[in-house]
Image (cartoon, rainbow, N blue to C red; front, side):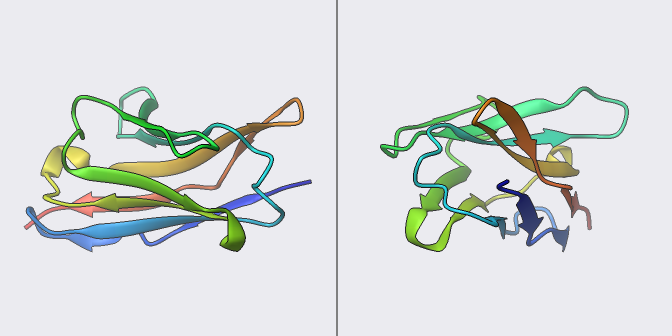
Length: 115
């Protein structure tokens, strides 16, 4: 079974950047949709970005133009480059992938944007 592990979170000042990684324990070549979600304290989990197997991407309006999702199938890894971070981006970020009838989730990585 493929497992997902996020990394790259941390504390950053407003306007700063972080790059999150989602490493899969197996091949992601056959996984079509891969997603980044986030959940802020007291809020519902929200979809941030999506990437398909062909590389097509889509973003939530709140991050469009600031975040970039990508994937490297050779490294079995998905990324989320986050630029111009704002305090409202503070959340736990999760990677997600529907795969072989299961909805795979990582354990999450905390991103805190604060001065």
